[in-house]
Length: 189
Length: 279
Image (tube, rainbow over all chains, first blue to last red; front, side, top):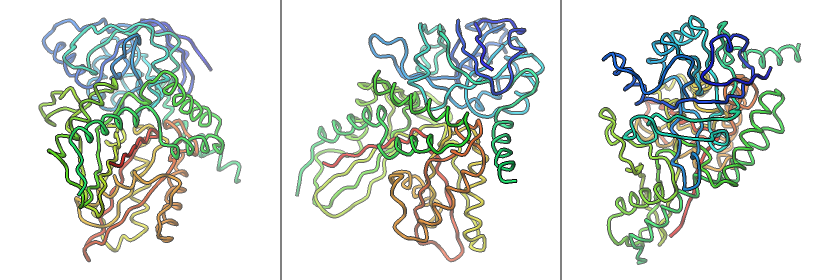
C-alpha cells in the first residue's frame, strides 16, 4: 500500500501503516543525529525545552552535505538509526511520532514504537542525492556549532519512505528477508 | 630524480575528493545495473532501480552521491626516484581540506574519539604509504562512509578453523550487519598477516575493481563462493529482502604465523568510491 502523511501528524494517522508500505511524507520535519540527541537528552535532564515540539513530530536522522549557492540542501540520505537507540524510547514516550533513518533498531525502541503508536520509516541509504529532491526549505534552528549535526527544520514534499516498524510490532527487516527466502523454498519445493 | 611539488600534490588530492564523491567508478555502476537486471524479488529490483536513479540525479545536479562523504582514506605509492618538495602528509591533508571545502562535501571527522569536536575540514586524512620502484607518485583516494565501516569485523581464528571458519566468519558478519551498512554492500576480506596488517588487507581489497578476480584461481574460486553465500542470506537491498545483498567481494592475503589465522572483513556500501591519480 502507498500512503501520504503530513507532519506534524496525529497518532491515529499512523495506525493504518504496515511494515513494507510506502509513505510519501510532506510538511515539517526535523533533523537530529548523534550529537543533537545527546544535547536534547541533557536539556530534558535539566527540565529545559527542546528546540522543537516533539508531539506529533518526525525526526530525520541525517547530516546533509553543505548546500551550494542556490541549493536548498546538499545530499541528504539517512544515517544508521541504531546509534540513536539509547535516546529514542524517551523521545517516543514524550510524543515523538516518527523516526526516519535506516538500519535495525533495538528491542527497547521496538517496544516504545508499539507502546506509543509511533512508526519507524526508512529513507534510502546511500541515495542522498535522490532524497534531497523532496526538501523544499531548510533552516538551522539549534546548535549551528555542530555543523552537519545541527538541528534543521525541513519542509518536505512527498519524501518517499518505507515503513520498517509499524504500530502493531511489524518489522520489515525481519519479514522482508523471510518472505524472500520463503519464496525460494516454495519455488524449489 | 623527478621533483613533485607540494602544490601539485595538494591540487591533485583536492580534485580526487570532488571527483570520487560525485561519480562512481564504472565497475561499481555496472555491477549495480547488472544486479538490478538479475534480481528476482520485485521490491529488491525496484530498490536497486532507485539507487541507479540516485547516481543519475547526483550527476545531473552535481550533488554528492551520498551525504556521508566519508573519511579520506589515501593510499600513496611513492617511487624511489621521486623527490617530494615539502611535507607529503601536509600536502595530502591540505588537498583534503581544499577539496572538501571547495566541493561542498561534508566534514565528518572529530579531532578526538572521546571528546568529539569536529575538525571542520575533514582532516586528518588516513594515509597509507608504500615505497615502490620508478619515478611516479600514485595517489588513490577512497572516501569511506561511517555506517558501513562500523559493521566491519576482525577475528584471530585458529588454523584448525581453516577455510570453513573463514566462510562462517564472513557470512556471520554480513548477517549481523543486516540493513545497517546500506546494502547492497561490497566486501573486502583480508586473510593472514598480523593483527594490524589483516585490517589493512581488507581495506585494500576494496580498491580492486569488481570485475577483476583474484589472480590465484584458489582465491578467485573462494571469492565467488563467498559472494554466493552472502547473496543467499536474504538480507537484500537496504535489508528489505532479496538476492542482492552484495555486489562484489575481494580477498587479499599475506603469509602468517604458524599459530595464526587472522581474518578481517571491511564492509563498504553500494557507494564504493575510489579515484586515482599518477603524478
